[in-house]
Image (cartoon, rainbow, N blue to C red; front, top):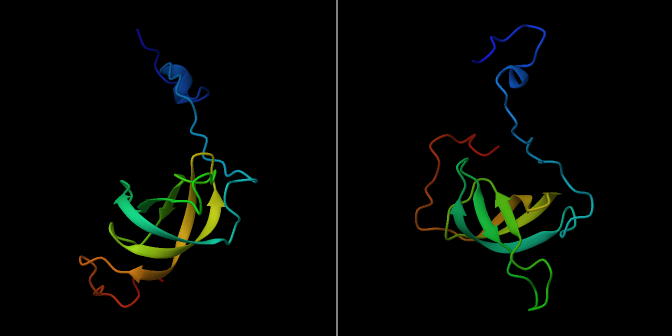
Length: 116
């Protein structure tokens, strides 16, 4: 039978949760330099609406080839120039610098403050 939570005990202890904490800590020596600009094509969107791109690499033996980059404010099918601002173990986070090839689905936002 489950224990009732007591104010002095954390809920995870009362309900027997053994979930691992997500390791979302940035790494200091990632595959990309902070501030490095890359040209990538957006493949899909995450559940949060961020664009997902895979870095193609500059050559066949590039160790960074296939690395996932998460970029907000983009649409699948677009080619963008992005600036990396954080590295994680499995992916990198970047911001859009410019849209090289816009998607046909891109529309002008109704609010002029959108994206600022």
